[in-house]
Every structure is written in C-alpha cells, then in structure tokens.
Amino acid sequence: MKYILDRFEGDYAVCEDENGRTTNLKRNELPSNVQEGDVLIFEDGIFIIDKEETEIRKKEIEKLFNDLIK
Image 1 (cartoon, rainbow, N blue to C red):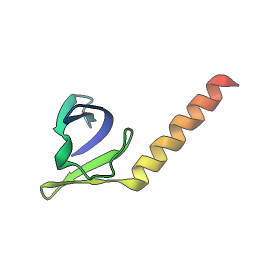
Image 2: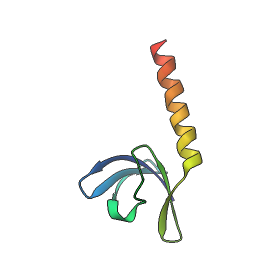
Image 3: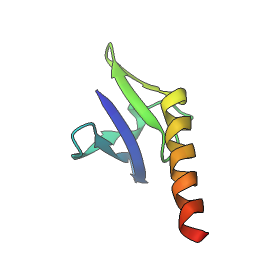
C-alpha cells in the first residue's frame, strides 16, 4: 500500500492512500526523516520512503505551479 504524507498533526501523520482516502498514521512508526509530500510504501510491516516516486511527484507539482504563474 502506498501513502502520500499530507501533514503532521501532533503524534500523527495525515496521509492519503492509493484510493484517495485520508488516514492517520502514528508518527513514531514512520522513518525519522519523513517529510510532508513524501510517498510512503508499507511493506513487510514497515514504512519506507519511496524516494524515486517522491521526486517524480515533486517535479510534477513544480511544473504545474510554474505553468500556472506563466
């Protein structure tokens, strides 16, 4: 299952899953270096950051933003 980290609220990370549903994950169960906007994969009982997918999403968002302000 993949998640996109939207924001932190106290001890929880508010994430969106692959189906567009919002879910709260315990912050202490995530990698310590996780940031808002990161793509997370839940695999074998642990969360890992999908650095490649995160970078792709950031570039897509940056392009959309740049297209809007032109």
